[in-house]
Image (cartoon, rainbow over the protein chains, first blue to last red):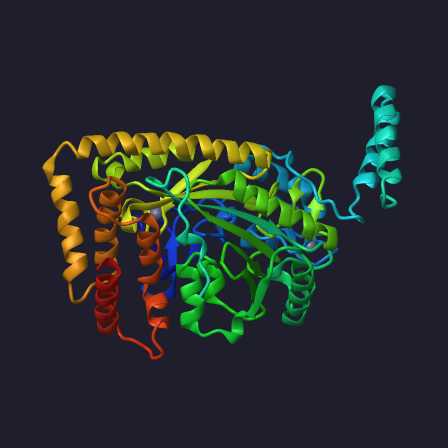
Length: 160
Length: 336
Ligand SMILES: [Zn+2]
Ligand SMILES: [Zn+2]
């Protein structure tokens, strides 16, 4: 199927739009999807660009049979569908995903807010960082982390 | 009927129509919606619904999408309360919405939770604060899928990181008429934002309404994303105002505005496209003080005159011709 915008390239991005009182599908090539502003998960109101990610995925990986223990999805399926199956997929395919994430966002490390679920693993994460700091003999950081863990576990909740 | 969010007016209202913040979240205990069975989707709906209904100071109405008619669902999408994607398939999906429609939460769209806060005018800080508070309250009850390196997890890698999108709807009739819009769309895309028609596509945006949003969510904090959007919005608004000064130098602009006003007041049938073209000019005349009409009336009409929404206002199905006749009638009444 050809792109409805340029009529030249193959359409790989399929989006739902509201046209004249019903939900219609729009078919675009990746270039046109970007230039029309659909280059993100939330386009339109918007949300949901099946396939765009697949186009960006670095091809030629020979680990395609790698399988997520959480949901059973293979790397092959992730690449062709552009979607991950569960949270565990990100652990399983992490190394394969990072280059693509860099192309997508320009960066690959989160810097925003974090969940405050009482069972959230903030304390566990700090303990991991503490272990690493100790292993690196970065005792200044280790002391800071130890204090932070102490505070977390003292203030309400048990931090676990 | 209680007042809806779009009946308010906000700051920068001559250019900025509305502001919204979207947040995507998933429950750690379940696979993402694309990998979730129908019974599990219903379980997710129950779990999230209970958490949402425990939020103090808000009261949400819960609807399972499969209990709504096609026209009701499409009307929700026309009002930007759900995504077109959400409207296109209804099984296992549900919507939680406040009475004034300022907060809506789609369940089992591409993520288990898609929270939206929508406010009139230019209000990114306020909209983000509300969304952030609701997210915090939900995360006390629900364990979200989160990774230290990648942030909030989603089946779609383009939403990783903050899972947060902030957007404004801009009315840019003068930038369209002075042919500056396409180069501005290209410019904002280089800055990690996107701008596209809020109704209709690209330069054919209906009603000269454009939605400006951040596209990057990983490696950028919520605060930075909001500040970026604010600064680009103010720059675009300043350009639009300068372009308005230019086009008003010619009598043709004022003439076009009053002709549009005349057609809206007296026509007997009107398509959505014609309506959107004319109401854009009338909005421009209204914020300029040429026409005594407030923006809230214009914004309300833009929402109410969309095809599925207008069809819902009567208790029988309408064909296109009947819709066009009813639209002209409603517009005449509103502008009397
Ligand atoms: Zn194309
Ligand atoms: Zn998985």
